[in-house]
Length: 458
Image (cartoon, rainbow, N blue to C red; front, side, top):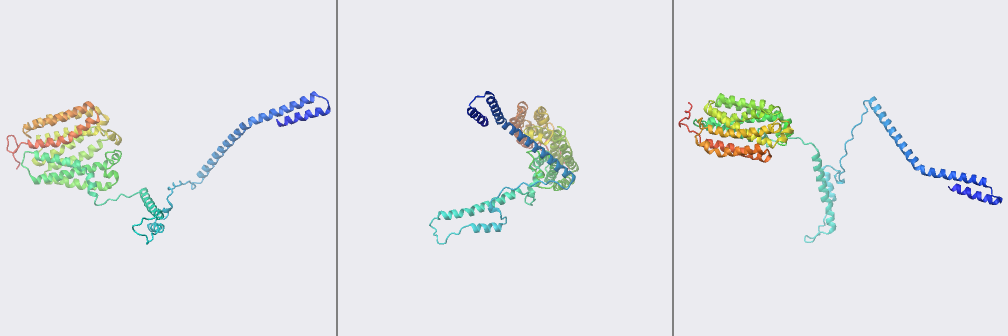
């Protein structure tokens, strides 16, 4: 544009100097200036576009260069197997400059060097100056930073789980499910006490200890088999084998040390029938019930049989025979376990599903509620049959009717509502229902020498 203006001015001067007006040269020069001005304007407009296009081409060429460089490195790596990239460890967070000395003595020496000395001439009543307080602050900061750094380093390190002798009784108690073992022993004791024979303390103690040892063995083997599945459940993730508090070898050794003397006490100390029942119950719980939990819902019925055998063992330990009274006690325990366990499993459906267990509450929720209600009503019928089988007097069905009606009502509520609130009420009711029912049976027991009672064994 500037060039066109200059050409126009020079042409105007040239025409004036010659003194004549020539139209053709003037128009030609003006046309040339206009073309130059148009070309300059077009170049000014298209220069940003060309610059961006140039940048894009450069970026594409840079990407292509990176790609070929990557292929070259891959070829070299495949050609020479010894050339492999190593992962660079993640750098630890920057620590305070006071933590560079890791040893305790050096840290103490540094603290002592940084701590200012208070002049001895300072009176006790006089408050320290601001300079003294400022001087004391670095020492406290250093001590806190050293302690904090040591704690963070200890937290990052893996700690070896060490078994101490003080913790071993508690660990073995949790391995043997001490609460469940206590329930098994109590039902066995109730069966022994309800037998229509004189009470023999020596036989009772042997039955008590033998049944407890057999129950500890069965529960320990059960936990040994279910370690990978218990780790997925919130209810069982803190068990000793899951947390690694004891080794599997120690758990199996403990189970063996409980099973062998337990079965031996029941067989040779009490009678062979009770010992056979104890051994069969261990086998049923560990080899049938435990694997069935992941296969079929029939595990609930098998588990109910396992829970029904202990009172039968108590009865056979006292009488030496398996008669109608033993079957009645086993039937009561068998029916009681369905409202108890079905209500418990209803609130743990997510846990059982996460662990991979096949439970009625997970796969057949309607059947779970129906079975719980049926066995609540079955308790009414079996309690009414107790005096007919000469186990209790006729007072027992009458005084046991209120608690049986109450648990049947809660079973109906659970069947109808199918929620956590009704299942929780039924579960907690079952916890006090069984001890109270057995206590009522003991108070209404048919005494020895009464009509229909068995004669004492020789």
